[in-house]
Length: 165
Image 1 (cartoon, rainbow, N blue to C red):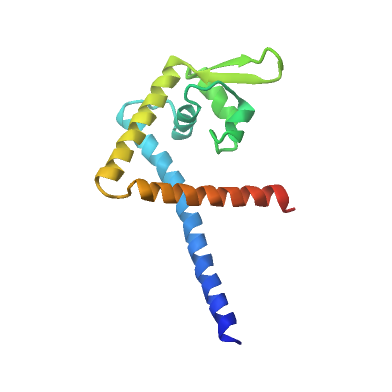
Image 2: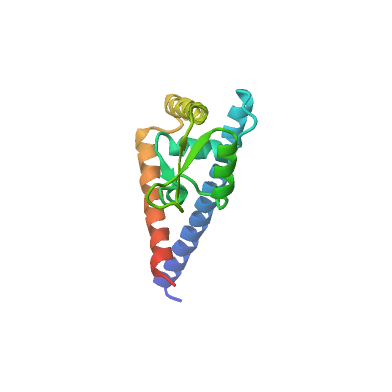
């Protein structure tokens, strides 16, 4: 085997190892984020809402959206969006209203209670951002590098879904 071919195989193996490690880290970080949010809500005494629901309320923010838009806009990553929307409406965290034009479509927005939850998550994230920066864990350049890299991976994966059968 030529040295050039061996080097290519070695670098591909190294890249594959790094890629799998990055995938595992993204998955772990998402689960850890949910644990951090859950912990914060336990600390402030809000126990009837779970971390996925709190993150959904945070992501919706001041917007009014349809259930379909929640996924397309990246507000919700789970598979059971209808269940969580129903629970949030029942508990008084969200308003829902049938769309005047398309009666099949339902628009949702936060209630004052939902905005309170959004504010708790926002304050948590703000504290984390300040802590990461002030403790030198990661700075603006590092965050921008990570974000840009993840956006490129997201575009690549999206292209794979759309164009490869």
